[in-house]
Image (cartoon, rainbow, N blue to C red; front, side, top):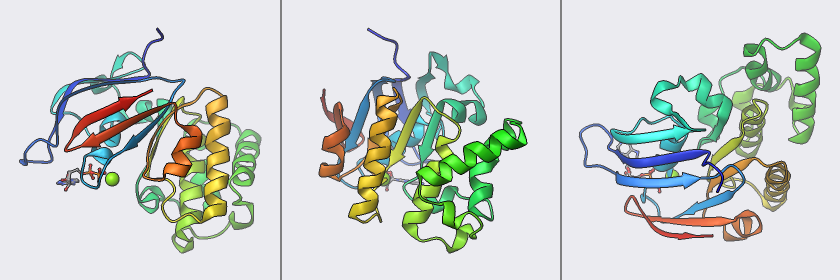
Length: 222
Ligand SMILES: Nc1ncnc2c1ncn2[C@@H]1O[C@H](COP(=O)(O)OP(=O)(O)O)[C@@H](O)[C@H]1O
Ligand SMILES: [Mg+2]
């Protein structure tokens, strides 16, 4: 058995002083697996995804990422290992233009000018954003913002991706494009946890399906 990429060990989480949303949950996610997470609205999917991505810190229990306790890791270090796409991707775009948004992560890594150009151009092409490279990000459509957010997450080359309802706001054609991208990432061995109700989208990709209800995992099928 290979080591899990992400491991939640007896994790509990509550927003502020509210009742715990997640209470004593344990879960292993593997780097070579595509895991679909489903369940009704309010069942805790987004909360779970954010805990797995290190964005929300558990109140009790541990989240291990690649064998390391995430409590000992800075968000930047976690971001190199796990790419996370918000349910509303507009929230994670902060650069003024499309090109700058994709370049940002590479500039942090102090890549050379030419290498950054090459990587950014490739990413823009992959996500059909080349014609928008100088566009202001706040003017993009929802689908364009979503493609940009995924592109910016993927230039980091994370070994694992967590996507929260990535097909929302995408038309059929864009959904097919996203599905093809995820399929090729999967073939490259990138692990994924995708929160989605979109059965047709999930069924092509998923190796494993987790169903949530009331903050608990009520089904886990491989
Ligand atoms: N920021 C927050 N503050 C307080 N409660 C929240 C917050 N975000 C979500 N919740 C509550 O946590 C529960 C789970 O929500 P969420 O994880 O968003 O579920 P899902 O993604 O499955 O719709 C819901 O009852 C929701 O109202
Ligand atoms: Mg949600």
